[in-house]
Length: 128
Length: 125
Image 1 (cartoon, rainbow over the protein chains, first blue to last red):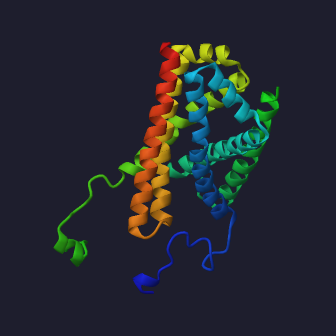
Image 2: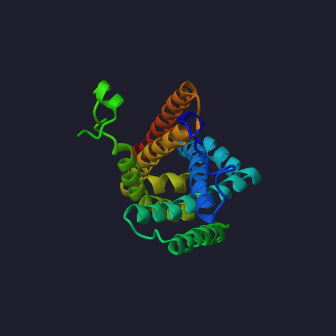
Image 3: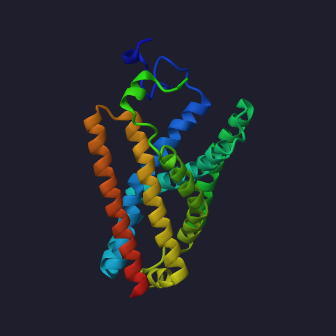
């Protein structure tokens, strides 16, 4: 294959690779990372509003407490837990542990379920 | 015998000297973010519904303000490193990649500056 025709990343999405649990979780890690970056806008807005004054803070609380704000925060919570859990999984890989296919599948499911459970747990606790 | 390719030999550039720096800093920031994010989540459970005075009082504690500044600095550094990898993998041509990277890093630096100043303003008030 000449250098020009080599598949460029993301070659895992497309005709070259069959989608697998590990590859789906990997691309989800990137997607949640990018999503969390967008979510930092809300964090900055919230902190800046608290620094500006009571009126701005009340407005920010109203925006974040709205239907759309709560939906966004809920997804953001899941993205944060997913990226945190899968990030820890990556750190273990970096240290050389958990590379067997069976282990990678097990840790992958642990990431999926822990992120979902922790998200719901947080929202149950935080519910007014 | 040299293991360098003929082209590399002609160019004579050698190693970039900081080849693993990006990778390493991504790991260092992610390790630091594990306890910081856990603290942040637990804190949000406590203050997400707080009124203005309660929240300002909560954040004015120097331990909390310090942890928050550390979290923000690490988050935006980690975000910048992560977005760089995404652009390098997916954005083409080279010019678009460069502009996307430059704009993102400027914006992330700005967001980091705004949020840290906000925390300091509350902490030092």
